[in-house]
Length: 170
Image (cartoon, rainbow, N blue to C red; front, top):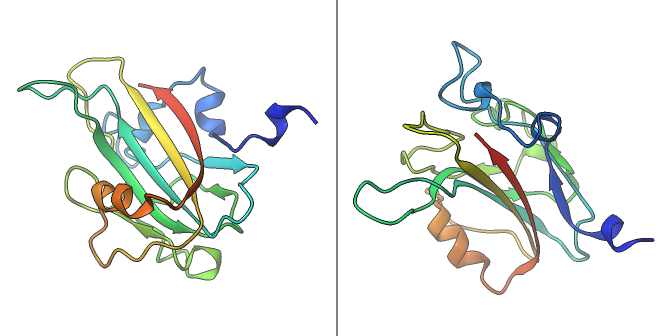
C-alpha cells in the first residue's frame, strides 16, 4: 500500500471537478437560491482513535483594510461523528432538519459575521484561497451554545490526531 492511500485527506467533488475552484453558488456571489450553499465534502483514512471531527473553513487571503491579511472564518462545524465520511452539499443551516441520526451531534459555529453557518462573502477582488481544515480529534468538544473558531482552536490543543486540508480558489 502506498503512503498516499493511507493519508488522512479531505476532498470535495464539487471543487476537485472544477480545477480547484469554488463555484459561485457556494459564495455570496451566487444567484437567488443558489447562493452561499455549503459545498459537499468527503474524507478518507481517519486516524485511529478518532472520536470526533471538527472543520474550520477560512478565506486565507482576506484583506484587513487596516493592515495585514487576517483569515476570515466562513464556516465552523464541530462534533462530526467518525462514522460519517462526508458532509452533503447544502448541509449548513439544515443540520437540525436532517433530523438526528448520524447528524444529531453536529453543531455549526459562528462565522466572522457572528452568525452560525456557512458564508463566503462577496469579494472586492479575486482570486482568494479558501482553506478547509478538518481535524481528527480524540474527544468530542463541549463548547456551550456559542461556538467560534477561536474556541475550537483553543479546545482542540493536545487532542488533534490528524489534519486534512483542502484549498479552493475563488
